[in-house]
Image (cartoon, rainbow, N blue to C red; front, side, top):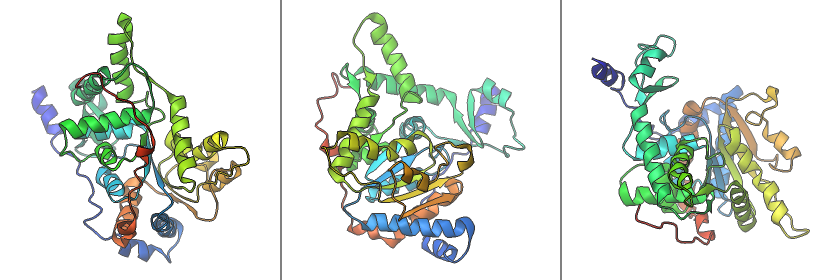
Length: 361
């Protein structure tokens, strides 16, 4: 009975929105002479189009929130595959717990009913081993299998401090070897040499994987890998110094937003005396956060100017939930087709990589 009940609750998988399958330009254009967030979205789309047309200006894509479980994976893959994102800064939840998780063959599921009138209460879900993300379900057993896979990959890596970019490269390489037909942000980034940073990596399945890896290795007195967050800062500064001009497309806020904005400050610390490091030339943020609590997630992009991070000439914040705003923005950019004249920058190639694996994990 319990098995049947669980199967019923996990019957409908979330389907990802194909932003190439509809032309968002008509909707965005209709918003242009409206007001409030409709007009903001149209102006943000214009700024993003300028970023793409500025072929010497890499786009830094930041991702926070439950984006893949919500059906936005294909929109994000489209940005990478079509050279509309040159660096990714994400939470571990987005690229490990959700994207890598789905690349292994697992799914997120649509909860029957609504969050206000659910067909199962949370205590029943707990008893069934089902985790809830608002109106979406995840099988806890599948998550544990994902954690175990990550731990196994880490077991095969050289025992040394690693930046999050290096570890995400290894997860992408694992998918290339074992799940090459998967639709995945990490796999697309690996193929396009788009560096992926996860500055709060411990707060994800990767963190759980390192705990398991360290318990097996370090607990027995053996060498083990570790996260090198200082190296993350150094690597992002290297990118900024190499390319100079940069633009931001930020989905949500949190650590990824701050990490990406801070690249300007980090680069200035490493620059030669008197060397100018420009602020981010363009910036677009899709958010539901509020500036009035003083938190970073909702802080205005103009506020970032006072910190020397974002130029005010081409910036826009759109206050709307990402499942509504991102598909329109990306579809508009895709069908404007400015990306067709934009070469992939392959910024991951600027780092000299040492041999990573000590076995064939």
